[in-house]
Length: 368
Image (cartoon, rainbow, N blue to C red; front, side):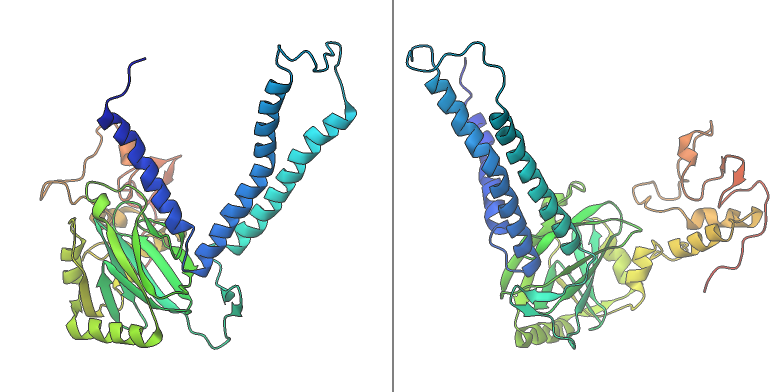
């Protein structure tokens, strides 16, 4: 068989070094949630090795013990059953499966990212008067935007939090799906447009940690990284003061410029931010003239619109930034599945849908 060239062999080895490096980060966490996830991996691995290691050992032992040249080994060609052996063979894996199931069940609920924290670490519970730090996360193309609503500031590609203070992340995206991941803090959580996911975590050690998107999202994906700073309270207060001193205003217009795709975006500080901007991004109506998703859902809940909802068509056109300026969204002339887009004229099972022009009741008043 022909040997692979040295360069090809190097390409095969490099991913192993990358995975080893990632595992070292994951197995050396600095946050309690990540530490519990590490412990879950270790416990699960040990439980599985209780079966795998004996099976590998016995396979090698039987191959050696009952080799053809070993005339001293017992030869029993008529042997067909052993109750004692059957009990051992089936009871051991069954016990492992039960143990793994119990560990998985408990951890699935205990480490639910939507579940508020009940402890700072293994030795300390959260004091009753502790106020969590709320951070609103937006995945842009290809950078990260962080809002601190209680502090009135925002940052791009830099995140900070005080040590031993619970962090409540609210996560969304502006266009395509990404994944918010700080290995030292907690597991990855998807960021999706028009949806909000959550993550509760806490950092227990001071330091600078890597954060990135763990879900491929286009040409600038590999540079979609940021730094997460775990600081003591004094250091965090100084960081907030620095953001307010050096930052600018994040208005709707500034956001719409920031939202445009860019790579290797430097850190930006915003001393103040539009208080309603995150909700507008979440409801996909940061662009003036667009209908918010919560408004559209209200219309749907009230039974949909009629002829009067035709004007909503343009308001429900999202994410066509790659289309030529002034062009209309693509439509099918045959009434195919392309018309099953929000705001398109269509029918479904004979019922009126939002944006139709074939009659129906007038659209109800939209929430202000």
